[in-house]
Amino acid sequence: MTAFAETQVSNAADLAEKSLQGEELSREEALSVLNWADDDVLTLLQAAFRVRQTYFGKTVKLNFLLNIQSGICAEDCGYCSQSRDSDAPVDKYRMMGAEDVMEAAEKAIANKATRLCMVASMRGPSDKDVGAVAESIRQVKAKYPQLELCACLGLLKDGQAETLEAAGVDAYNHNLNTSERHYGEICSTHGFADRLDTVRKVTGAGISACSGALFGMGEAEDDILEVAYRLREMQVESIPVNFLIPMKGTSMVAREDLTPMRCLKILCLFRFLNPRATLRIAGGRELHLRSLQPLGLYAANSLFVGDYLTTEGQAPNLDIEMIRDMGFEVVGDAPAMENTTSPLSERVQFTSRKSS
Ligand code: SF4
Image 1: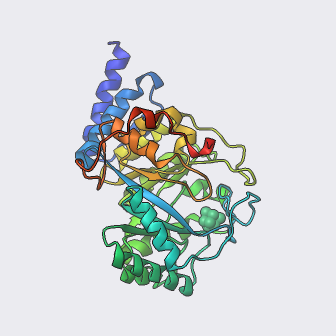
Image 2: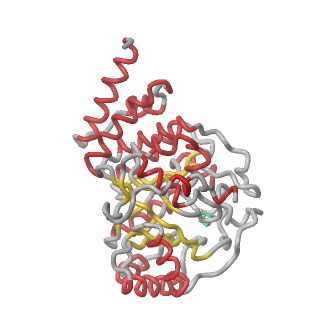
């Protein structure tokens, strides 16, 4: 082993140890994760896995997304295909009723997801919107109490988080997305402080906060560190890490500055800084991690199965097979329930829905 490789191994072990002791990585250490040598990324992943395994073993939690209101938003987030400035060809419909949400809940369960994330395109909900979502939550919870429900309705006004909490919502998602400094570059119709305010309202109402980030929007390394430290400071329980899917019709159509290695290092950084948080590899997984997707699970412990809000994801059977091939297990999947792999004759016929 070269002196350089020995240093990297001991540094990686130190990072894992610090993380497990609840200590914050210094800025220098955090930066070293982002600049880790590609040739030695397995050492970094092994260290991140030590932290992940301590709190989550080899389990992978699956989430299922439902766009409950699509393509109708007055905000101008440059990365979003549903913004007022986007020409992307997305479905447009108003708030779904409880019947449609129930159908999606059944689909989520059939795909082995333990959380249904209900996302609405909007700046923030009216009280009527919150009432409609609360009714869906009540009905789904009455039938499937084991299914976790997460709402994502944008900026909340006083009292709205409490209404959702009373209906039985488990979590509320509102991503910080990027650093405070960089926020003005991605959106002008609301600010970083507005986002912080909603996350605080959520935790104040006793709801589990889900808040994460989106990379590939021209952010600098300092922005990546800043948002990772912010989420640590806020002690959010769930962190989705998204990688930009550049959609035709949005202002960020040409941004593609991520590599699979870069994505892995970002995931490791988030794991070291947020050892106990459920780290979810979210949108852009297939596009940016590509063939390295399984390695991401050494740092993260959660995935979204099925489609994203306005783009298709990998077929769920491929995700489940990937998890099982790694020797990991899907949360809530009884081990003796079924054969862990499908017959070879079936597997060779698997295709991503993108190519079908
Ligand atoms: S507020 Fe949400 S739905 Fe609206 S443009 Fe921004 S990200 Fe898209």
